[in-house]
Length: 245
Ligand code: SAH
Image (cartoon, rainbow, N blue to C red; front, top):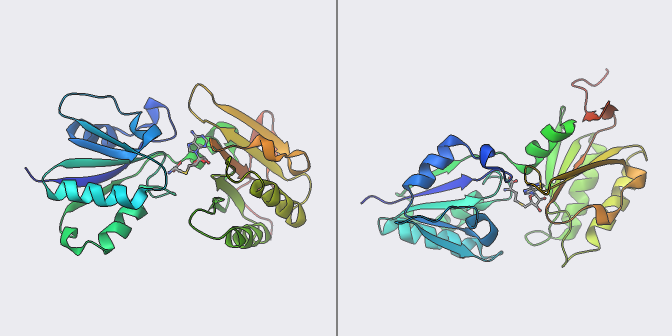
């Protein structure tokens, strides 16, 4: 048997938002590797071994996937959303850099619908002009760097999507993020808190920056900050396609 590793995005939660390509490889897999809540989304079946692992062990997980593929297994590494957006795709290549013996393996990355795009579609079109995505977690970069990028993005006129906005282990940093936004943006700037998008627990709330509170975000929330021109139309939020000269 020829082994392979496929890193696949499972989308934001709903079954309908898993691409047919990803469903096909999941049906061919002998092993599924990933963070516990993501592996929990895979239906068990005979011939399939599930390997759930904890958060923050992405590199171990990637090495394990490469080892299994080298032994002839068909391994799918799962991420939520898109695997290239703060997901397992980069972790796999980091592992591959230090494991040259595996560089000849068949490796593929299959895209998925990332949280910010699922959330933006629910809200209307808040990311309809130039935007950037920022991971607010300081697990893998200093918080000073988060602050620096945030300020530059705000000054650059970008709409923004924040991943990993707030967790129990870092309750204060998102308050600091709101403070920086208040220094850089006008009080009426629209912010959408999109929680558990495409699941039964989905909740979307849009407020002006002046009314935004840290408690509005948690680890299941992606936060969308509009640009200066972002506005409401009926129950929607959208960003115009153009910027006046
Ligand atoms: N690779 C994933 C992101 C992983 S980081 C993707 O492309 O979506 C985890 C963060 O993603 C969460 O803290 C949250 O900010 C966001 N997220 C993931 N699924 C979400 C969902 N269904 N609704 C809202 N935010 C979500």
